[in-house]
Length: 305
Image (tube, rainbow, N blue to C red):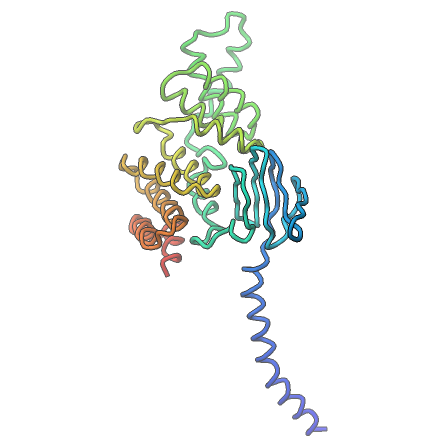
């Protein structure tokens, strides 16, 4: 009996490293070769190729088979996701699903890292005025309504207040009014926030069109949020040159450290997406230099390792 137990022990000791090695390879290889892309939004026609000449249609909620060739047509627009990763297709064409996620620095987490610092990607920051909605409500009950000056000032503030409360439909209505009737910096900010609302409410194509119509000035108070948001969207749609242009313009304004740090991190993604690895690493280092202890700084440092 002792000899038998010794035999089993010796066999397990020899076999276990082999099994462990195989499991390790499976854990490291499979996540890279088997990534499912889910279709979150689709305008136009999206298909995947089965065999040599057969194309099968896909729809919202479908999963693109791993390693598929896909075709977007009909002036299409599609938003795809794989866990935390997002990919946006804005042009008709044929794509390899395995190529869409890319190999640039930790694309799976960059929106989360940026979004944690710039809540405008999902929500307005907490230092916004919260009293405008109550003022507007009281004035709206009057038959005399309010002067053009007061009404103009309220579109942006009221929209922000509604946005903070989670009333994105109400905020969208306010920002749309502001984009039509306001002028100058307030009109530009209303249009920008209208685009953000459209994105949140599930209209990414309309959001992209609205956001692309905004041309902020260097002293506009929302320039940092606009630049980070647009660069994020451009990177996710693989429009790296457009992301570079937005970031370069923004960085030329000598922004505050936290804004600049986010911009340099995004610059790393856009440069890596264009094959400029050395430039990407330089951008990462600049992000680290602006604050190695922040979440963005730590993420950039990890990418440099």
